[in-house]
Length: 587
Image (cartoon, rainbow, N blue to C red):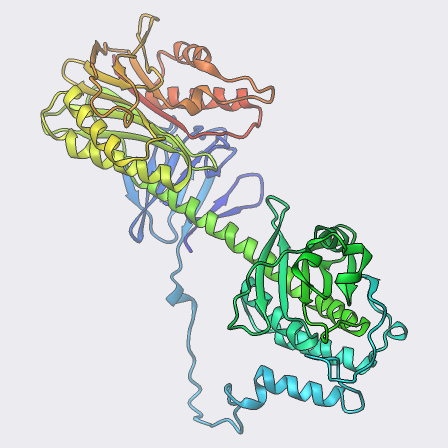
């Protein structure tokens, strides 16, 4: 993976992998690469991926950016080993392809190995290993009570027994010690193969049917979010039969999951603990229920029952099932953790995709317009929103400036933002008025996006020759024009957000950018930035920052706003994207 090696003047170097489409560099902690260099601007430069190539661009920094000794003007391609200089900080670009990282060496001897092992050999399958372990460990032991009891077998114990989940001691178990070892081996070997959580649970159920004479078996696991027990697998001994409805007594669940006890009743119809429970109603005769857990954490239950009078469970069966659950619980818990990790990774991939969609539709560079400075930046928060900004140069020389915010978060918001981007670009090159353009975009969004979603948008057309700014504000935060004389002008004319009413009649406004004036467009992530007391930054603080920097460049105004937000937040995480667009007419 390509990476940046950052060498500081006063400390050890850092390595930053380039895993995203765009990487910003600067003194602000909001950047992907934060460099504490006094000569660096708060938002100084950007590294951008286009296909397999990476490009460096200066973002209007005060002191400039050097690449291999030359000043960066516009966008320059990065080559492996190239060095970026920002103040006293050096940043080396490294990019080593996978093919260059491995070399095959042929020794030319041509000697053949003396022996090989066939991977599909029957002796090395799970069943083969299982048979070998069983044979070695049970040569001198009687069989584990399996499947259905034979006629004339031992008399059942009293109708109800209770055994706690403490590990059974060999002296307290009537079953031969070797049989339990064989069971542990069998469970362990069966569950060795890589499998999903559901596959493992089905394997456990199969082992239960093999170990005890149950007719039905189910496994319930606790949901980590709701903390409720949910059935993950339910099966009857005859896999071709319908499982039907299995009702588990609340008393059993409380004792097994709540108190960590293993439950046995060999005749539930006459067990005083369950006389009024669902088991009596369903005609269940024998029940086994044991907890699934690791250490003190109980996260599930294995439940087995039988309505057959001749298939009564015994204390040996309870010992077998408790042992089986103890061994299987570790594998089940590991599978649960893996499943949760996969869910987190899937979510992270989705967020990464949303970030890339969002960044891909942002301008690769601000247009160069004589007599003007244009700057745009977007700092995404962890939960991807749908902030969108754009500069579109029209054939007649006019500039379209837009900033929008799609409701919602995540990939769906990013996809809506891409639809907005496509709709605006499809209409921007036409000679329609702003009202006609936005009405078409609004109708398209109203017909295609969900009813509970909408888009706020500020859309403006600048004539660089005259400074005339025609604009339409569709429910967005009112941008401001900071006039060189010190007055502030809000741009609010327009209408409601897009995508709500397909035939809404929008109206456009008109104003003038005089030399020295600055247009500041912002998303609600700016004014809704909160400090540790829960107070919002608000529009008044924004106006104050802009009014105190009327003489500054567009990039400097951007940095001053970002600095004020960082100081105000006092380390509080952003809850929304922060997007800024600055258009300054030079004096």
